[in-house]
Image (cartoon, rainbow, N blue to C red; front, side, top):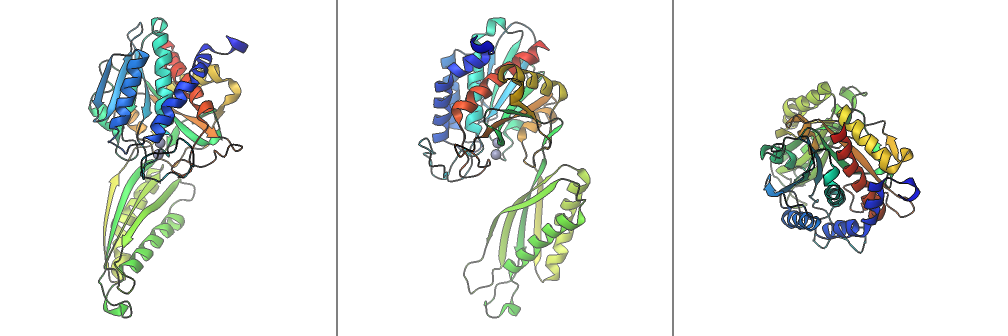
Length: 399
Ligand SMILES: [Zn+2]
Ligand SMILES: [Zn+2]
């Protein structure tokens, strides 16, 4: 191979135009969680084109699962998520979203393209593959728990999966590099919905009503103060409210305000303290101001903890195809949440997720995921991701 490069790296690089075409098609046609119908069809068509026929569509509603059969009893899995976000793209890229108010701002278009590339490489080498590889194209990562739906629909059975690996784009790391988290990768999440009930009145005579907007301001400030001043500062936590809705006109006191947000934690003690404050004690503060609070909290994704063996195999795979210098140990986990965590938690399969760097300052690829300007250099990132995924499957089967 040229310059002593690993053959999978060479093969993935040769495949670059196809990988880029796939990713840009997906990027232009983003679909929301659990509505990835065109995306799933596109994935199934590409898999057939590659020559992979053993496939099941509609797994966990809109997921696609395919098997590359090698020689051996063991099966390992690779996973990519496929959904996009309700956001309006502002990258100005020629391949920007063609769908109003939808955008692939979390790189799942890239994950899907990388897994298709890995599928092609593994299919080509199937006669030399010491086992089987299950390709999991998952719907609904962004809040809908698509991983759990696929697990419930039997994605880890028939054949039984003994390990699973995945990648996620990571704009804090150089384009095409791989980041490793030993242990925790992403946090526990919960959803929180608050409804603040007041009493409408004339804006000029607030004492005749209860201002729900002022109640919301007090409640949100109290929550942030609780988090900052009452939980252990060493513990990792963040509470963010992303929506607020209320009021009908400028000269009427709002009688109702709704806010929704998310809680991210690692330590159980802090998680329980925040839940207790919002769920039980915040109502007293609101009542003290003359209003009423309805708070509902629901458990989101579990924390993701990388399995040492799977991470080790995937890291070896990355070093082999990309070189030692391209693989970086990351000091901190993320406060993000990932439903890939269901594969080890509910599915009881050892799992690891690698970070795939996308940062390129010169080309302006510096924006975080979930930004309207998030984008990456797909010609550099996709072949690296495809080669690492394919080789990770091979290393897992060989170990
Ligand atoms: Zn996301
Ligand atoms: Zn994501």
